[in-house]
Amino acid sequence: MNESIRHRGPDDDGFHEEPGLGLAMRRLAIIDVAGGKQPMSSADGRFVIVFNGEVMNFLEVRSELEALGHAFSTHSDTEVVLLAFRQWGQQAWPRLAGMYAAAIWDRAERRLTVARDPLGIKPLYYADLGPGVVFGSELKCLFHVPGAVGDPDPAALDEYLAYGHVHAPGTFYTRARKLLPGHVLVAEEGRGLRTERFWTLKFGSGGRRTDAEWEDEFRERFLATVKRHLLSEVPLGAFLSGGVDSSAVVAAMSKVHGGRLKTFSIGFRDQKFNELPFARKVAEHLGTEHTEEWVDSGDAESILPLLAAHYDEPFADSSAIPTWYVSQVTRQHVTVALSGDGGDEIFAGYSRHLNERWMEKWSRVPAPLRALAHALSQLPAPGAEAAERRQRFAKRFEDAELGGTFLRFFSKYQLAGPSVRGGIYREAFRGSLHLDGELARYVARHALAPVSRDPVENLLYADTVVRLPDDMLTKVDRASMAHSLEVRVPFLDHTLVDFVAGMPVGLKLRGATGKYLLKKVVRPWLPEGILDRPKQGFAVPLSSWFRQGLGRLTLDRLRDSGTFEALPLDPGGVEALAAGHEAGRADQSPLLYALLMLAEWKLGPERSRASAESATSS
Image (tube, rainbow, N blue to C red; front, side):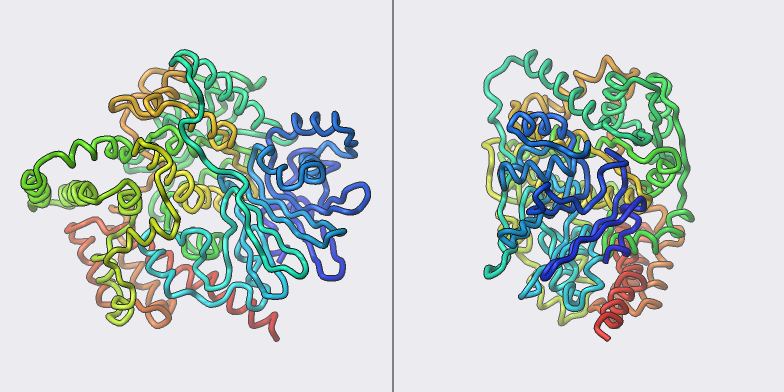
């Protein structure tokens, strides 16, 4: 199990074994390189910890513990986590700001506690084996334990093809589970597994301040948060896309960092997706040592098996491709990088947040006029680009007719709707899914309920607790750790997230301007033209790639891997999907990419899992 995640910690390993328990750890040494070896035990030997990640406020927590009489034998954040748990028990976790998955064994009570950070920046997989529990930082750890993962789950197939991943706590397999962010898992002899939540995102609790007071305090907190994310004994840099969030982080780093920063960017030959000129402009303005790399469709094709191997289960966020490459080039220079992930989710930076603001007004437009606008949006137009624009407009009108923010949330980020997905399934499987009403079932499954009177804040809540950990943060963690690179995300320090959630929503979305207060704070730090250009996102030119050969590659991979035989997909339906995209009738590239990664999973991780389980059983 430990060897399978060597890439997450190439510097060292460690083991603790006793009757009924085994703990193992791979270490990427960043803080207290000499003294932070794990597993680590308390001075009296009662508690043993294995810990992945970083606690950014560990120096403050350490000072508090020392004032309470605790003595430290190392300078590591691991020991701070261990003694914080000894002092405060489960109340320790909300005090720890950072990204982590930690497991602490209480030898006196024979109790195991496993915790995952509030935003889900670091992963944690586990399986209930009945008489015991097994867990690890990646799903591949569990492949080596017979019965821990289970078989591919047919019910998860449609969820994956709808969203590009399987929502927590589920996985693509029948038995393996993800621990939800901000939760602990507790296992002790004589009792079954139980999970408890230790952090909840709350909106509108920040009290009354003037706009100027909010601005001043956010500036102070943002700089302080970025500064504590710079603690490291190894070389450190930053991802820089040239967008608002990464530029804001790098600008803040330049304010609080003593030396010259190293920044890293990825570009595409297709200029509609290329942000290198903007990243270069920010780097020149801030005086960073800047490194660029180019990616094209041939590069993407070559790394798909590697992506599948590191995500372990089917995962279809195509921005994993540039994330992989920017992590690869960054690791050639530094061991730690800061990223701007999370800025859109806490500061209302997506167009869907603005669209949600207009939903109430749109609902008051007479129904015949809404129907006419929808019909006009579907008028045929020549060319693939026109067809894709028509498709996007039609989707917006369809979502506008849905009766609630959370229904629209699940509809907006689907790769393909139920009618399109139904066309690639075998008839019996399609009939078993009950695709009608699926959005309401997702809302119920996640127990989403209004947390605010404002629909934009409800959408921000769903973004943060559902999509962010399952998609965005999973993407970054696997792509970066595959290269033994630690990526830190200061926007998602939960103390900063709590503060921003307490702001009036008008400071996040003002008129048609998303991230209003963030832009106002960082504008003096950045060159002109960076904050006011249209949002691009860290996307790849997927649609054109699938008209230039990836569509045919997808069909070949599905056939060669045996995916058509193993899963209830209809070859004729998939061929028709690919042909329609290639002809420019509609953009089906997100679903085609999901099918391609499904085939790569079948060729790689699924074959490895079956082989490992068979070998271990025998």
